[in-house]
Structures are given as structure tokens and as C-alpha cells.
Amino acid sequence: MGITSGLVLYAVLWFMTFLVVIPIRLQTQGDVGTVVEGTHAGSPEVHNLRKKAWITTGVAAILWAIIASIIISGLVTVRDIDMFNRMGPATESGETDA
Image (cartoon, rainbow, N blue to C red; front, side, top):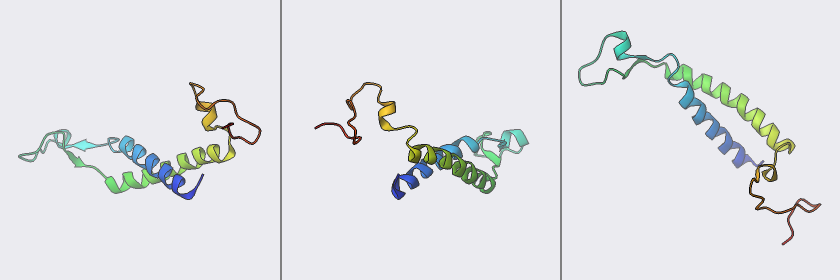
């Protein structure tokens, strides 16, 4: 895995984790009972985005370390997930015959 692919993997994991973490313990204006005129009752009153971003960074780092180690070790390769056998059989050097 190259540097660029490692950074892309981390960015994807970070944003996916952030979208999961955002609604956790979210207090809406409707929950608190103070709906500001012109806003929806589902608008956040207390969102704690800085804390959630730090939690996301830690969880994404752990997930990245696990997934990157699996990719680097070769435990799972692209050939393992080739469900339709489009890559053909592998030769000893790891490449297909052209």
C-alpha cells in the first residue's frame, strides 16, 4: 500500500465513522424544548462536534491500522474477492499470463 492509498483509506474511514458518530447523544431543539423561530424542531441544540471529531479520529485510526495491516500482510488480496473469476488464474510470479 502506497502513501496516497493509505491516506485515501484513512479519509474514507474517517468520514464514514464521522457520519456514524454525529447522531450519537445528539440533543435537538425539540428535545430541549426551545425551538428557535424559523428552524426545525430536529435542529441540533447541543452537537459537541469537536468532541465527536476527536472520537472519530481515534476510532478511524484504530480501524485504519487493522485494515492496513490486513492489506499489507497479504492476508486478503484482490484475487480473494474476485467473485466472477475475471482475473483468471495466477502464475507463480503473481501476475496473469497476457
